[in-house]
Image (cartoon, rainbow, N blue to C red; front, side, top):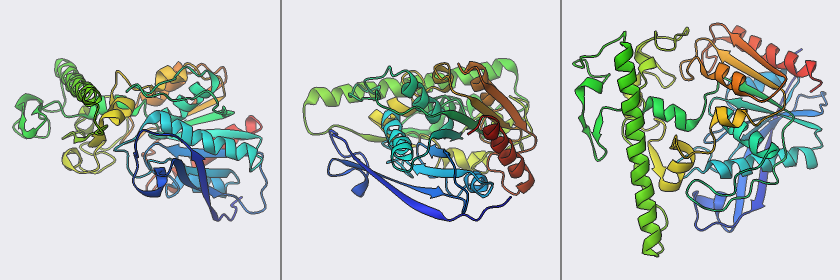
Length: 385
């Protein structure tokens, strides 16, 4: 059945004390946090469960999945964090607080009995992070040392992990360009690691030794950057001045071997392509992940050794029913990730499903989008959600 839906604007506001303003404009000023979202309610279809989609750094209401679920009869909320459309200063712990405000509002004000967290793409590790802390709170400080309280988060009742990766930090660690020799001069590069350079002696299909060398060089670059971030943050703290943060650029952050070689973690994806288009252009373009960041944001969302929002580690702490969906032609999320989360999850009730041929966005694939919706709706119905 195809229900008629209409978007309903949602505005949440709650107080928060902060050392300084992190986000531009009204969203984080005057000691208040303001978040916006859209709720899709199928007309004439009451429900006791709300499916909540949230991504740390963007909004999801224009994606096909949330609206398709709503047309199938599911009440859906697309929740935006305070950092929507700007992850430069993003703190994952504060995103969890934003998500918590929506979950509490859903139960206390809208009257939903249950909430299903739908973690799509970058929202997957966020959902796992949130649920792990809602069930078993362990974190009292951000990776940069600021106090944060995650003790009163309302746990969700189920989770759908769909076309989602392990974490933002792990993705950057496998996408960052290791050929960059000088962080201040991206034109200084190691030719042997410069996979987009036609003169690079290492070409697809890549050998196992080269893959290992490339991955090690990526991790080494990440850790050099993190060391610089920590040193700079410590220097600012020791100065005792009003300069509390600093923004910076990380050049060339979209150089995954998988983009060039379909034999690395093989699936049905298109070779020499990624979800942002041509990988060579994405690597230097303005929307590559981790391109612009503050010091604190780097440690919270991008540092593979410091971020608390690590998917597999958080998955081990959850107990609610989990549905993990892999899109077999995903051109953003690596093939093993959904299975890794499924296997790591502490849930007794967990299901793994592959949608053959589906890309990251289901673009031009209405029949595969329908399959995804049917799988989610059936799974929810089987659990009385």
